[in-house]
Image (cartoon, rainbow, N blue to C red; front, side, top):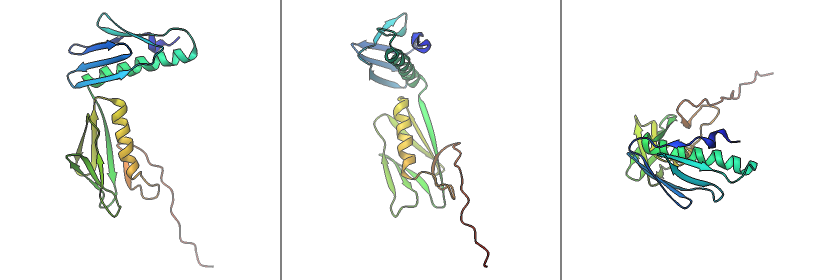
Length: 181
């Protein structure tokens, strides 16, 4: 039995949910987000809470039950509090510049690398080295952060590149000069 899936997702004050067939739309103070649930699961609105039900106790349905409930809970959290990720740029001359389309990174290539932010994502830059990504969709915020990090991932010798704030990069020892024989 999915213990997570059985819990209803309460809707806080100021948040509304609308269910049309398999599509659920959640509106709140920070915005609106919509998602299509799996065809096997049933979504209902009961006592100002969203309830997810599964048709059987198959392991596949149990997994989908917990997943769907968590996705709906993330939608509610997104429209109330929002989600954010922060990236840190390390390296001499490496920097980020905010642009109307998103952000432009200077990370050791022969040219600056532009990153166009998708709809619903806000990118801000602090001190040219901290990039903050904010939005209501947890999945999209994480995907944007991963795509920006992938432009220049941290390398293991000097640690230069784009990393998550607080990420530990395993460092390797470089070559050492061998004594002459």
